[in-house]
Image (cartoon, rainbow, N blue to C red; front, side):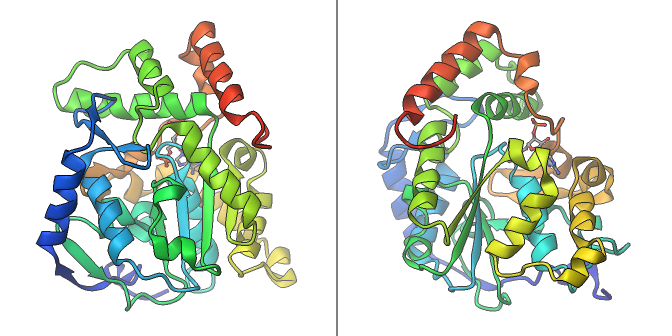
Length: 339
Ligand code: A3P
């Protein structure tokens, strides 16, 4: 790999602007109910029942109106703090393993975080009145979103051959990760940190970004059951237990299975190692880099905390855990989702 840092991932073409469209959606979202939540900004309730702050909700609606899918597109879908950074790293390094071998010393991850390699529709592409020209991106184009299945850009849902890779996480770990992330921002902005009790109440009331958690998971779970060839469904806990098996399934699902020769050369293990929490946290791009999101420039290091399963046991009281488990059981009952 010899190109300079600025040239990968390939950039979209020039963006046009459509201030009128953004303003129309801004006016509409502003008319919907809004609530306090984890972060300083209020969460609006979309008419499809989910919550987000103003800019990413407007971006979602612009993407719905303007994004044109290609059959070869691959979209990562997650709730925030569910393993987005990890699955983006795994997908990018799997799909691009021939141009950028995972064990090469100048892999793009040395200079760019996974969120710069695979961009969010609603936080990076459809922002600041822009309608990006995504035609110049080579196949397969890789995108990401936190949006629930019900509000994905319609062209993604209608395109039967475009692939969606979903990752869900134990609700209690998702809550702890979100709470820790939000408190970093609150402290920076001079706000009191949120107590875990207050955070758990918001969570149980569905007042989390892109939540309620349960609706988000069930939306993609049902889509996966109905169209397993279009929607891959991973769980963070299972990825942690056996990352190599998940990399193989991911590669097969997106149409880039590993050859016997690659298996013998240890390519799968190299990808697992490249994207591991320990390796990613040591990279300059993680330690010093930032990702421009519609909410501002975010330190890449903030997407990494502990990266373990069941950290909730260190933070949630048995009563809080019991309450969340009871809601989860009730919401998932009859869905076939293994709780
Ligand atoms: P914790 O806060 O529990 O440590 P997201 O990427 O969706 O924002 O999720 C962030 C969570 O994923 C954080 O969880 C973070 O530490 C964890 N994470 C980030 N990169 C990871 C990796 N390479 N392997 C495992 N977990 C990772």
